[in-house]
Length: 203
Image (cartoon, rainbow, N blue to C red; front, top):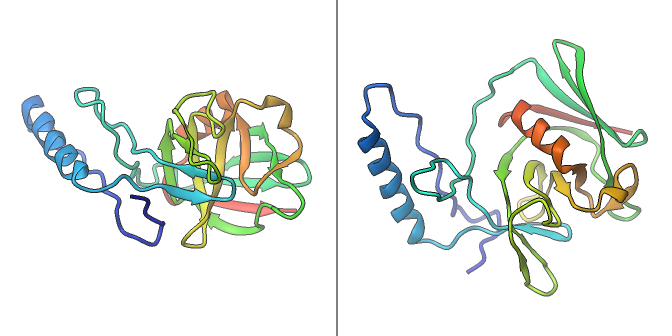
C-alpha cells in the first residue's frame, strides 16, 4: 500500500533513553517499536520524478529503520542555496562554514525560491520510479544517492537535497526540482543539519 504524505503513517522515533536504562531495555523498546511498524505499510514519499521508501536506521541490534527526528543541535546554522551559482552555502553565526556544488531544477521544474526549514532526514533511502514502479535499492548508486534532506512539501510532492550517481549533472540545471549533490557532500551536509534548520533558496 502506498501512502501519500497527507496520511499519518510514519512511526516516530522514541526519545533517547536515559543512562539508567540497560542495554536489554533499549533492545526491547526497539523490538516493540519495530513490531508496531510492521503492522502498517511503509510510507512512500513522493516528489517530482522521485519516491522515497525508507525508514531511518537507529539501532545496530535490529537493523530496522525509523524516521530521523533530530532536534536542532546548531540553532545558528542555516543553508543558503544560490540557484545561479549552483551552490549551497552553510552559514553558522553569519560565517560561511562550508560550500558545496549542486544541480538544481531544470526549466519547467525549477527549484522553489523562498525560506524553508529542513522537514525530513533520511539515510540510505530507496527510490521508486513513479512511472514504472521499479524500486532501486538504497546506496550511492541509487538515483537519489545515500542521503535525503527534505525542505519543501505541498502535502504530496517533496523537494530536498539528495545524492546522485550522475556526478556530471552537478553544476547544471538538471533535476525535477530537487537539489542534487555529490554523495560525499550530501553525507557531510547531513551531519551538519537537523530538523528545523533554516533553508533559504535565492536566485
